Image (tube, rainbow, N blue to C red):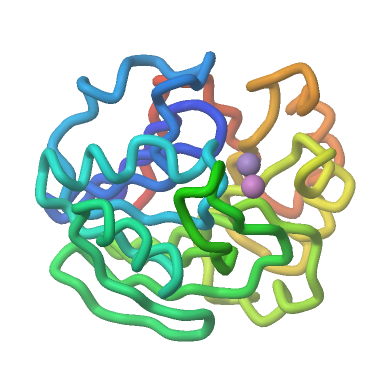
Length: 225
Ligand code: NI
Ligand code: MN
C-alpha cells in the first residue's frame, strides 16, 4: 500500500512500508504548498527530477535536517552533496534498491540549470519509485517522448505535468497516459502560477477511460494498493 500526498506544483509525499519519500520538495515560495517546509514530516529520501528551483526547492535543507538521501542524476546529486546534503547518484536508465524502495531514473526532455551561478547544469529525468508494492512514475518536467512507451506495463500511478509552457500541456499529457497505460494518473505542475493555468477536468475528459484520473488539491491524499 502506498499513500501519496500532493504538496502543490510537482511535490508529492509518498509513504509506504514505514518509509517516507518526497518528490521535488518545492515548499518555500510555492503559493500552493499546504504547509511550510519546516512541517514536512521526517523523510527517508528526497527524489529530484531536475535542478530548476521549483523542483530542487527545499531539498538540501530537508536532507540536512533529516539525513535523508537525495536521489537524482549524478550532476544534481553532486551539487546537493557539495552543499552539505546526503546523496546517492544514479543516471538515466539505472535503478538501485534502497532501504526506502527501488528508484529508477528514466528519460525526460527538459532543461536542468540550477538558478544563479551556484551550480552546474544538471540532467533532467523522470523517476520510477517502487514502494509499498506500488510503482509510481513521476514524469518531471518533460515533453511528450516516444520513450514513454517503454514504461508501458511498468507503472501503476503516473504523476504527469499538464500546465503547458514549460512542460507538456494536457493534450500531450493525455497522449503520454496512452503510452504508459497506468491504472491511475494524477495531474501536476498546473495552476501554481498564471503561466501554467490549466483545467484538470479538461485533462480528465481527454484521458477518458484510459486511466483513473485523480485530481488532488494540495494537502490531499490518495491511497493505492
Ligand atoms: Ni523545470
Ligand atoms: Mn518546473
